[in-house]
Image (tube, rainbow, N blue to C red; front, side, top):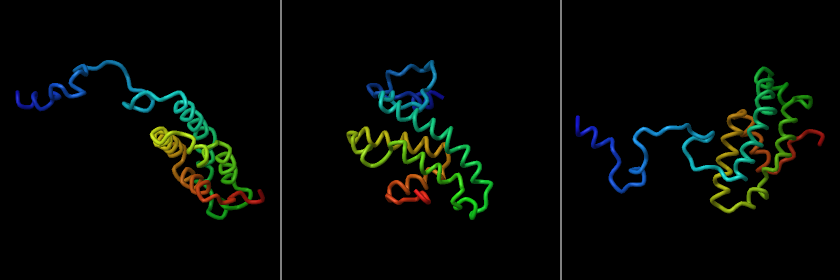
Length: 138
C-alpha cells in the first residue's frame, strides 16, 4: 500500500508538488487551463452566443429537412453562413494576434462552433477559408 501512496504523490520539486492534496474550488468554463485574457474571453462569449442563438436552433431545423430542402434558396442554412461572415472571424482578423494567442483563439473558436453544431461549424469555416460566395443571390 505504501508503494501506491508514493506513486500517487508528485516528485519533490516538480511544479505540481506545491498543489494542495485536496484542492477546493471549481474549474473555470474552459477547465483547468490558465485564465483567459480579456480578448479571449470576449471572443469566446461572442462565439458562444452565436452558437447558442444561431447555430443550434438552425442546426436542429436542418437536421429535420431533406438534402434538397437544406440546399434550397429558401433554406435557413444560408442565414447561418451570412451571420457567420459577420462574426469577424476571417483570416485577416486572426492574423492580427500574436502566434501563441492566435493558437488559443482558434481552439476557443472551434470548440464553441463545434458545440453549436459540428456540421455547420465545418461548413461555415470551409466556406470562409475557401473565400467562396456560398450565399445564393448575394
